[in-house]
Length: 143
Length: 436
Image 1 (cartoon, each protein chain N blue to C red):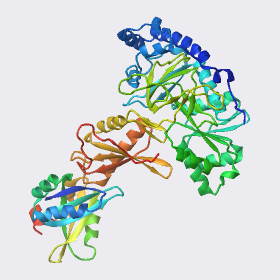
Image 2 (cartoon, helix red, strand yellow):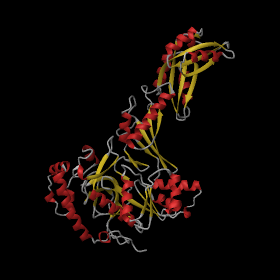
Image 3 (cartoon, each protein chain N blue to C red):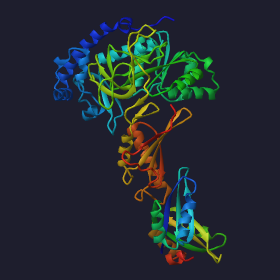
Image 4 (cartoon, chains in turn orange, green):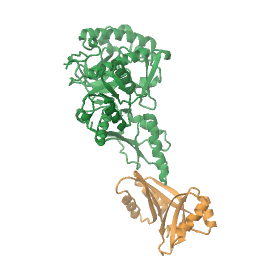
């Protein structure tokens, strides 16, 4: 139920993102989803890739600080109000979203929402109870 | 303009008379510390020198040096010669690691200090008719209270504004008619810029003299501050280990540095590597022996400040030796907005934060008139987080710890691992981009 996400520290310097994406491209690692969180002084790049372990090693070898975190991928139909229904369920359970990002899958029928919660177990349980589809990690890596 | 003296006799004493006073005071001091302060006695015993061996001023060189580490090793009061009952005040400045350097004063010391500070103010042209705007920080730092007592002793009116709240300071200058400004030179420039932004013309104020010290400043800064504040800028020198401000003071017509108040402080210039005394006029490390302090005298205290001494009589009439404006340090101490900062103190704070790598760099820049210190810290896997708030908490914590321990606000910048250049041997911890 959990998907491994890679987080990379981004120093506030030009060319960092280009460098990271080229390193991954050279190893034929495919990025499935990404988001950048930034402040005035630094950023955090969050990535979901098809080869997690390999990506982690190659980035670390190139001098980046890398961390691995578990996130949840929820699939909803790509139509108006799709995200709102998930968020309503989360709010009802008083779960805290640390961060989230979203993308639309290839067929264009469904959207995938990536969530990091303060309490992951409780989040999975309550989302499932409310009937949402939580993707397995393999499903996400091969999207 | 005729010279204004505070204690004309002592300030203009011909050298033989001065040296005889110095020798008498030195002999008394050495006997006293040998008897009362164990660390001094141990050092003198180890060097094989007794108080009876001091028969001329040249014999001073037989005595061992005192360094900042001696004060740290005997923290907080181990170097005091009197019991705490006789100590009426303590001050402290930053030490090279977590612990500050503590100094103490008896009632007589406070009186001596006030007299010396009054002498310094008079040397800078201040009189009892002046309105003294004292913008040195009040507190553990010796600047604020030291200058305050001196100005009162002089009979001037003191405005104890301390540092900060710059706009209000300018209003006070306008309304109270401040004539003498005491501050760090960088704060004086800050005042000038704030005045400009408030649309206050320097000519509309009554400022006449600025007495600036506690940090290094250049002749260019002097010109700038004189122009922008419409006053004559003079330099003052002092350090808490010796007494505080009032060790040496520039007169209004000196072009060769500050008069050292030699009847109280015996200066030497030494080669910082060999410790050997250098002849007059040569550049080296400044060393002081206090001749009149009771609670906390120092013998051959190494200031780590680089200067030189000129013994010719000044055209102001003072016979007191002049020390050149301090041109550098023999150690890595930085002065940030008047606060002494040692890189080792920053390291000490970082080591105390779990997971932080010991690789760091301190970048000092001057933005406008303000010194900005940035501490670059490498983000290791153990402190990294995928959540912004955790990293922000970390930088806030380091900033707060540095502020608590060093008393200076800095920026903390997180950088990639190995972003900080590794050096062979001694790491380059400090990049000082200020052009002083």
